[in-house]
Image (cartoon, rainbow, N blue to C red):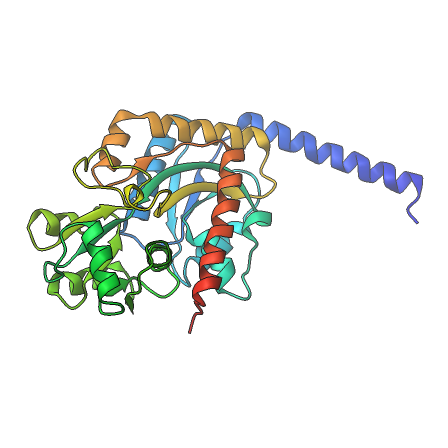
Amino acid sequence: MFGIRTLARFAALLTLAATALSASAQTYPDKPIKLIVPYATGGFSDALARLLAQKFTESLGQSVIVENRPGASTILGVGAAAKAPPDGYTLLLATGALTINPHLFAKLPYDAERDFTPIGRVVDLPYVLVSHPSLPVNSFKEFVAYAKSNPDKVNFGTPGNGTSPHLAMKLLEDAAGISVQNVHYKGNGPALTDLVGGQIHLLLDGLQQPLPFVTGGKLKLLATASPKRMPNLPDVPAIAETIPGFEASTWYQLLAPAGTPAPIIARLNAEIQKFTRDPAMRDRLFAQGALMHHSSPQELAAYSKAETKRWGEIISKAGIKLE
């Protein structure tokens, strides 16, 4: 049993620790901040992180340094962020993989809900459905009708088994009552190359990569997977117009290690709000098919929980397993 003096000392230590954390939060930040991106340089995730780092550096008065930690379906980068001290000086730019991986990997070096504190959602990158001209359809409704008449004869490229676009297509197959053949690639780049070359029929991707081929007439843009028509694509119907409630996108959120003081979380959430309301940032990301989406930490926690449940159900129903 613990003695009274031992308990008193323990309580005093807790008080000192809380006081130190409070003082640290009041002076935050007083040194550079590291922003971990679990993806390689050159993609949208990296570009978004560098825009965030630029604006945060200007606003916070301390350098925000982007650290790319790609590998193992984002597990390496996420795991590194989970082990960082909860002091606000290591942050994570997370994507939908955070809510998918728990259902695909039997063992992870982190627990997304336990090991992180949500800060805020930043942007959504709605998927668009693009097709090769050889597929004899010109609209989403025509595609569904054609797929129903030709089950398993339409093939769809994915950036890998169990990736978000793969699961989004599984969601679409189930919702539309169709069946297509999935062709897995190592990333969106090779899949897009084969789509342009006519080796596959369809692809779900963010707007940025396929857009030049759409404007050049080499691909057809059938629909968006946003909740409603995207402002920069007013003539392109949303899948939700045919299948109410359908939505699929890659989202980006900012997280901190669990235990990060609430005042620091609030400060960083306010910085995200500034970022999402900045007209220059909005227009720059808007041109790449991204939509600003600010949220409170509480709203983000609820959204992530719902996403984890949704993707888990899709993975289970489709019987998706990693080889």
